[in-house]
Amino acid sequence: MTNKFIPYGKQHIDDDDIEAVVEVLKSDYLTTGPKIKEFEEKFADYVDAKYAVAVSNGTAALHAACFAAEIEEGDEVITTPLTFAASANCILYQSGTPVFADVDPKTYNIDPKEIEKKITDKTKAIIPVHFTGQPCDMDKIHKIAKKHDLMVIEDAAHALGATYKGQKIGRLSDMSIFSFHPVKHITTGEGGMVTTNSEELYRRLLQFRTHGIIKDEDYYENKSHGDWYHEQQFLGYNYRMTDIQAALGISQLKKSDKFLERRREIAQIYNEKLKDVEWLRLPYQKNNRESSWHLYVVQIDENKLGKSRKGVFDYLREQNLGVQVHYIPVYYHPYYQKLGYQKGICPVAEGIYEKITSIPIYPKMKDKDIKSVVYRLNYIND
Ligand SMILES: *Cc1c(COP(=O)(O)O)cnc(C)c1O
Image (tube, rainbow, N blue to C red):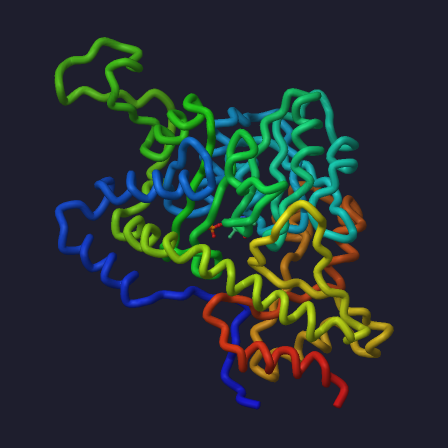
């Protein structure tokens, strides 16, 4: 067995990606040029949404979505604790209050029954996260949202190309957000996208991305002074993506289906070759949805193996396998503890956290690397 380091995820960049970037570098526009619009249109097409707004990263996409949803002080927003901190931080950026609802013990996705328990008069929105790329129970979530008049913002950072009842993730809710960090499905170095079918939300997102400034006579609050005129109508940010990144995004998006196919192939191999490892619990997949397999998360039965999760993790790292744990429950972080969140809010998620480890999965992964992961897990006690 070779001992080259195999990370849990990484980008796949080809020569044509590099050429696309170089072409922009030689052009007139490095930012806010034609590539942004092209990337947004192609991305919206890809996920079957009406509109897409490119931003500087996935976290900015979440922030923009929370702004567009008019989250403000006193508002509660329900999300999962089993996610990257950004899914909850974006609520705090808007001075809202994150409320954590527990997850389903099988899929690790937010449990609609738990969402209902957390709804109060102050609840304004739900941010479901498609953990590892397996879509959440969207019909149930939409039903709850409709009943209580809530916005739904899908954190689809793991779910580019995933489908729910035959429909692409990115078109189902008020807004969906994506990330183009190098470990995600396609990359722009740093980058993010918000998709929506609402023209009103689309306009707010665009304006938020550039300081709250608008240059469109039809929407001015005051009278135009002349051709130079524009208005800042609220406090936005500079969350723009560069054309350099957008060109990379366009080039990567062309390969998205190919990347997805390879991720699914690797997941199939793991499903097959690890199914007899009795101390491992493999990812549970629900019917009517297709995961995009951002992560492959296994649960370790410490009793059956006679080794702790940490023991397994450390051993695999020693073998140069870049395992990782996704995620530490958000409210375990000292910052959230200082805000007053107590351990014990979401016992299912906390229990899952104790047992899980993500094993490598990414399109560029070689067959021999997959074999090496499979081998280590099958012969861990030898
Ligand atoms: C990656 C990720 C984000 C944030 O994306 P960035 O582009 O890194 O800001 C948000 N939510 C989830 C679930 C993620 O995995």
